[in-house]
Structures are given as structure tokens and as C-alpha cells.
Image (cartoon, rainbow, N blue to C red; front, side):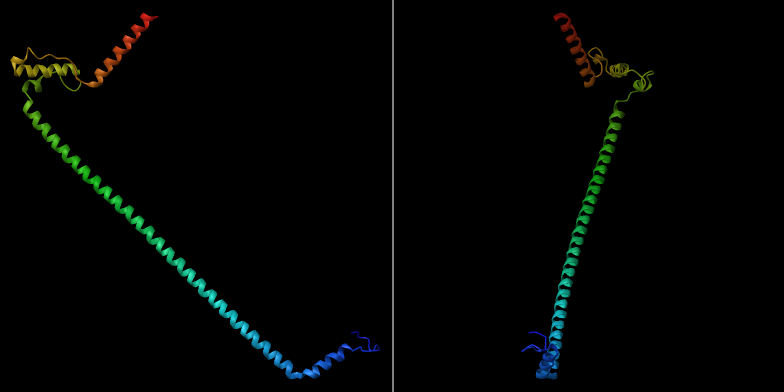
Length: 189
């Protein structure tokens, strides 16, 4: 429609609005406003309800997280307690083992003193030149001599051969094999 008043069938914009307002009247506008207010109030209540539901869900999630954290802390604490108990048990086992070792050492030293007490003679104690700084072969010969003085019948059968140490025998075997290899090399070349 055209707003030009001179054309036939034209209606002005201002007159149409007035006609609509006259037909509907003020009560229709008031009813529409009341309906809009009621609708917006209902929508506000719905939004508040949704916010309350969301807050409740968040609180439940936080409570679940807190319970999980408590469970994890208890689990960690139980692991630490188990490690502490294991360490205490290892310490007690080590203490018991060291106590047994001390008892065995005490028993061994007691037995050694008893065995030394029965074999010590005046000749072995008072013989000069045999001690810590002496040659091992001389010490062996002196020990064999002191045993020979006690039993003259065994004096002829006792011979001193040298120390019976496996490392010395191993070194001698190695040296012999080395010399034998050198001799074979000279023969073959």
C-alpha cells in the first residue's frame, strides 16, 4: 500500500495505527503486557531451576573428586606404611644377623684360645727370631722344630715343604706353563 493520500485505496500509516489501536483498545495491550510478564517470570523461574540443578551437579562432582582424593591419599599412606614396615623388618633382620655373627665370632675366638692354650710350649714362645717380621718358611721350620722337640720319634718323618697356599701353587703352575711355552716356541721356530 502506498502512503500517498491522493491515490485511491491508499491508507496513511498514521491512520492505520490509530484504527488498530481503537479496535484492540488499551485492555488488549495491558493483557499482552501481563502475559509477557508472566511468561518472562516463568522463564526466569526455569532458568533459576536449571542453575540450581547445575550447581547441585557441580557440588556432587566436587564431592566425588574429594572422595577420590581421600581414597588416593589413604592408598598412598598405606603404601608408605608398608614401606616403613618392610624397612623395619629388614633392620631387625640385619640386627639379628649381626648378633648371630658376633656370637659366632665370640665362639670362634673362645675355641681358638682353647686350642692355642693346649699347643703352646715354652720353646715356641721363647724362640728368638720368629715373629711377625720373620720369613714364613722360617716360621714353618720353627713350628716344625718345636713339634719335633716334643716328639723325637716323629722328627725323622717330618719334612718341611713350604706353605700350602693355593695361590702360590697357582703362580708356580703359571710360571711353569709360561716357560714351557717359550721353550716350545724356540724349538719350533
